[in-house]
Image (cartoon, rainbow, N blue to C red):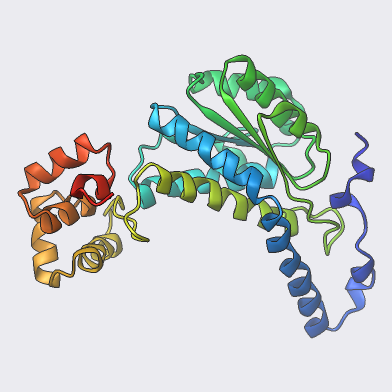
Length: 298
């Protein structure tokens, strides 16, 4: 597919005078273009939902969510992956972000890395990809060789494959069990897919990780009860989560957290059951980590 024919690479007729626009007009045009992104994502909700279901199946059976991408797309996947452990208490190995060129390419571009499909094969082999995993290939253009190669290899290994592209009829869509296409159209700055296309991919990744974690019991109500309290801010957040979930006084919530090793979910079950910290932990284990099931409130 010729890159110049892609909508993400064509000129935006509304911004041909971008370099002569007064600053207020320039910012207004950028904002107006950004408003179109959410609608484009909305139209892909059925496919996003199918991907979430596949990811949840992977997580339940001990598999992983693996993001795969190059450039801005890969950085967005990696960013979503690294936020999962503190937010949902996952291990760093449970949600993985693979960036063409390696982790160092997050800060400094590795030119040409995205053009080598064999790099994706090596990267997936390095993490021990299995049929239990779901691989999400992110490519704004929809044709990045690194992503195409990765999706092909993942499919050959029996893994579930998902593609996310910002053009219609994308090449990556042909290599995915679930193809998510979010056509964001021409960028304000021609070809700069870190703009609308990047925003769309960030929104989709937010949905994939958050909704799948909700499905596997990492959330109670709208509270991140599996938050990893690794700094003062998160310790305070864990206490407030326990207060919100149980109605307990702050001091009682803090005491329950201490008894539960700082784990908000266990403290919630302990206070609402009510039971000891040890019994709360056992209930959660039997319930597969789901708070409502542990409380008998399904």
